[in-house]
Length: 130
Image (tube, rainbow, N blue to C red):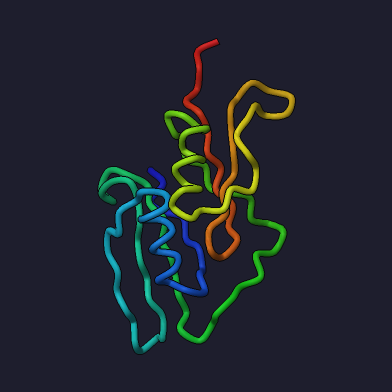
């Protein structure tokens, strides 16, 4: 077994695709409209779906905004340098919601960014051998 994708419902598909591709550097892998169901699916990721986990962005045509609820946590991305990634994301218009720095009660360097729908994405430095 392997993890295929994580699905997020989004209110503005074009804004979400722009965020994940232009701000976070993912690729739009595929996009398909389902007129009979009035929804569109778009898949984004850092590599092909055959060998990478990706994010499925689901846009229901008649919904402009979702309540995130209190069950969602975050998606985590490993980046080579959290500080530089935040500078790059900020320069591309991304919203940093937790500035980079050490984890409280730990040594991992992390930060958080928010997508256009308010979903949190954690940026983590590579794991170090202790």
